[in-house]
Length: 83
Image 1 (cartoon, helix red, strand yellow):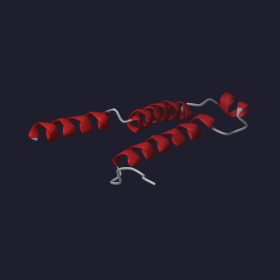
Image 2 (image 1 turned 90 degrees about the vertical axis):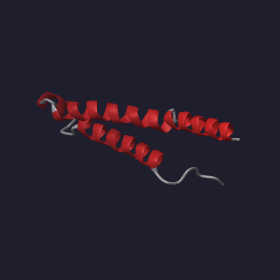
Image 3 (image 1 turned 45 degrees about the vertical axis):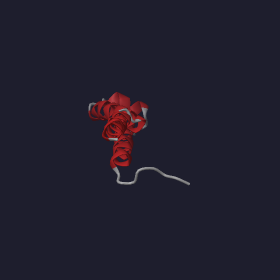
C-alpha cells in the first residue's frame, strides 16, 4: 500500500511540473520582459509610425500581466473547476 501511495505522489509531482499553465505562463513572462525592454528603448521614429503610442511597452506589460495571471492560477489554492 505504501508503494502505491509513493507512486501516486511522484505522478502528481511530475504532472504538476509539466502543467501547461506553467509552460504558457513562463513563455508569456519571457516574451513580456523582452517586449517591455524594447518598449523602453523605442526611438522617436518608431513612435511617429505608431501615432505616438508605445505599442511595445503596452504589449509587453500586458504579456507580463498575463504570465503572472497564469502563475497565480497555477499556485492558487483551488484545485480544479468542476461542474
